[in-house]
Image (cartoon, rainbow, N blue to C red; front, side, top):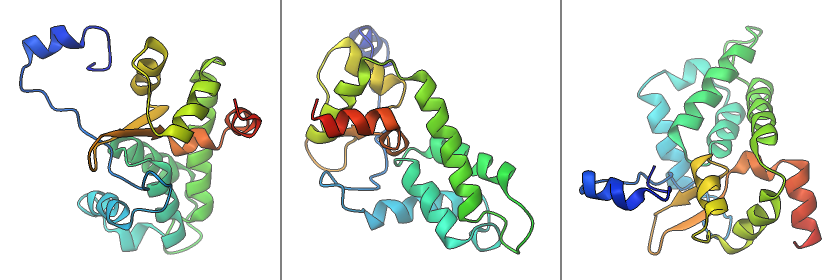
Amino acid sequence: MFYSPRASVLANVFPDYRILPMIKVHGRDNTPAPDGLAKLREILAQRIDLSLIFEEEGLAALCKASGGHPRILMTLVRNACAYAVNRSSKPIDANAAERAINRLVSEFSRSIPEEHFPLLAQVYRRKQVNNDDSHRLMLQNLSVLEYMNGAPPWQDVQPVVVRLDKFQEVLADGT
């Protein structure tokens, strides 16, 4: 809501607001952020016994694909559970994780307007958004995530959006 044009009204009503940043799963230079990935595992470990449910590769893939957004991580885990096959002692393997991630990729492919792909490519390259309606919408629909791990805050494209063919085409075109 604080990315909307009504943010100043909300700030007046709720003067002590907090924007919760994403947990950093990678840095601005796209290198992995082990501390952030460990924090996501910790969040899950407070809810389930990871050693009973996950194969390591599946858990790592879900944490990275979440982009550091805890609610997206929970959705990915829930979907991976639905795809899990009890053929091993740890049902969420890389296959179940990949199916859950692909489901989220499909959801984003249907929800991102065509005109956002060049903007998403710019965000991916610059790690920042402009203060306009299109960029605010991308923050609202979570195709772009904001990280406040260090100053100044920075933004990046949600990792599953990066997997979209259309995104990759626009990124390769340099537009």
